[in-house]
Length: 162
Ligand code: SF4
Image 1 (spheres, rainbow, N blue to C red):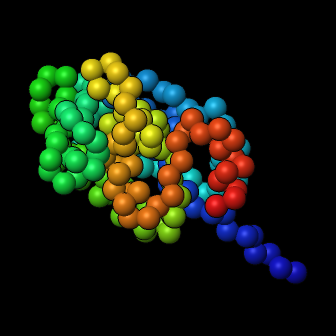
Image 2 (image 1 turned 30 degrees about the vertical axis):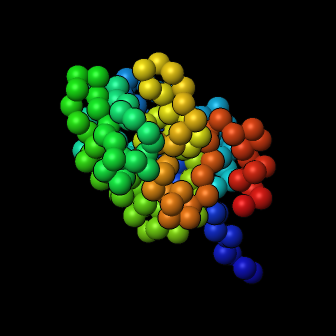
């Protein structure tokens, strides 16, 4: 009898989407389809801001200008609401997320939209929503990892196709 179970596809996921307490505001916000995601995939949690050395809760932060790629290349900074420059924390957290993805052979990630780290399609700046990527999303995208927003329509079907 074959007792081997087929291995689920490993998918990197923003830790806060599991409902864990790592958001800047200390609130829990699990993804509404978390049970189905757990059933279908091997979820590998990554919180770039915590892995970059930041505490929870923490003051909100924004990319000062441009996008995550600009922060990676030193053309822009991430500042928190008290004016602290967190750029190095964000770069370190992005790199740690990439290493985690590679360690677990993830070629796909589901990331929290509008975060200055995890935003796949959007970030916020001065209370405006901008069509730009966060720092970790930019690095993972640059390194060939397929990104899905947590707000993607039909997320389960689209993940299954890839
Ligand atoms: Fe951490 Fe990303 Fe969630 Fe922010 S959005 S709490 S950086 S996992």
